[in-house]
Structure formats: C-alpha cells, structure tokens
Length: 78
Image (tube, rainbow, N blue to C red):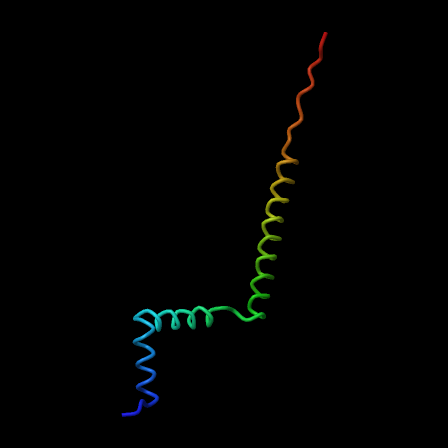
C-alpha cells in the first residue's frame, strides 16, 4: 500500500504529538485577534483623548483649590 495524502497527514499529526495541533490552532487564534493598523491607531487616539480629559479634570481641580484660599483676617497689633 502506498501512502496517500490523508495517511501522511495522519502520520505527521501522530508524530508531532497530541498538543501540536492545539499549538497551531492557538497561534492562529491569537494572530486573528491582532487588530489592524487602523484599529490600533483608533485605540491610540482614544487613549490620548482620555489622558487629555484627565488633564482637564486635574486642571479644573487645581483651579478650584487655588481659588478657595481664604484670606486671613487682619489683626491690629498695638
């Protein structure tokens, strides 16, 4: 009997071990989850906008704290 394509594939799978296919499948899955350049740029821009928003919140808090300083009371010293 001469080996056919299916026989050689099954022989190769048996020779690679039980986790070889799992490794290939996991690799394929992870590669499919990598976002495109357009998606990566979108998320980068979103991060920048979030940081700008946080900066605006911090600046507003600083301004509010700076304006709330109460002046001391003058006391006449004799």
